[in-house]
Image 1 (cartoon, rainbow, N blue to C red):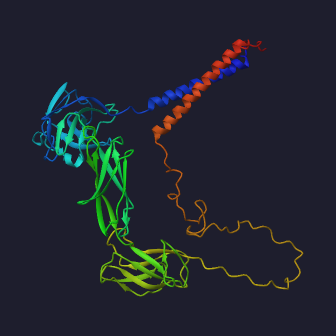
Image 2 (cartoon, helix red, strand yellow; image 1 turned 90 degrees about the vertical axis):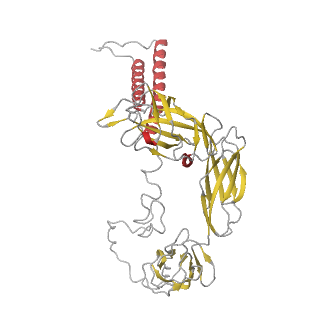
Image 3 (tube, rainbow, N blue to C red; image 1 turned 180 degrees about the vertical axis):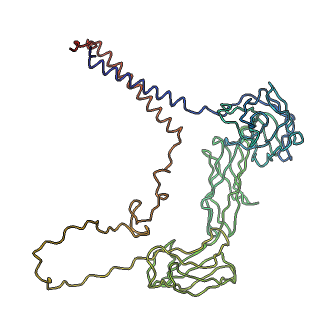
Length: 488
């Protein structure tokens, strides 16, 4: 029996590891799902124009070359129903017409089908004016869908999610086949959405595509609040002081070049201007207390709750305590005021609230109770002077052995509401759903994990292969790739 030289053994081991790593890469790659969404050709529309507000905006006929997949699972197939989709500027799709069955099954080399409702029993038609929110060019996609629930075939049936494509250009209420200006979309957000009367809110309009250039007007009903120029796909504007009430504001995009970009309008963003739903004041100082303040036993506060029913009487209680408090009646504006509520001496420390009834539900952000935290009572003070008598001679005997049980820790109260951080606060405070559980923190899916494994495995394979080659070349150059003497 001959024994390979150590360098040759190392080279062989490195080569074997490289082959294993390459095999792992090949296995993971073979499990990756095929890419989807690919046009297999264009379809035609007759007539080639229409109105968005028509009962059925696209109601002529559609012609296309090719067939739907000739596949079936029991009574389910993907060659007897077609659906028409509109692609929005952000890449999402919306159904325009589905349940097209004229001339089915679609297994011939080419087909021309009627889109009219009369020729397609059970057809479902959506209004294009609900889907298309501005001028520009939009893509239409015609697909084969499942005959039962009109879903797109899975990749195991027809890889690549094939569809036939067509472009239409929208100007106002009119659409026509052909490609012109690029369609745009605009989304509007308000921060904050609830402000005090005469307060302001920051409006942010986000354009799709982000390359679109132009201006955005911010409109409250019939009043234009102002406008801003789009920069980097966004336009920002701070409202002037808003009167009390609700304000449904829209963002209207006007392109710098109508030949390049289409106009668009956002869905409304609602801002509510109202006084705070409740307020709590320290009775003695008149200081307005913040959200969930810390109170002391015996402290008196004034509580104001708004959005109630005028003339209605409301009762007040302290959660977890039997103390009785006077009732209060809502004034003409629906505001209820308790001038003096005193925290009882026997109230339990920890989170609690002033719990009134019935609840006031008017307005936005209705409040069912006014939260506060009751401070822990101060601890007993130690004796001022120690005893002069130490209490007798110390015992000659040693004290008992150490306790088997651990000493009491102080890691928060039993409700987990005081003292204690995210890992030690109380015996029941801080559930797995707060503070980020180990199983739900923003991890990627299987495809992402597989891609990372493939990447690192591929790098490892390259490194190991290079190392093996280096060992072999080094061994040859130095005369090390030889066999030792045979063993007895």
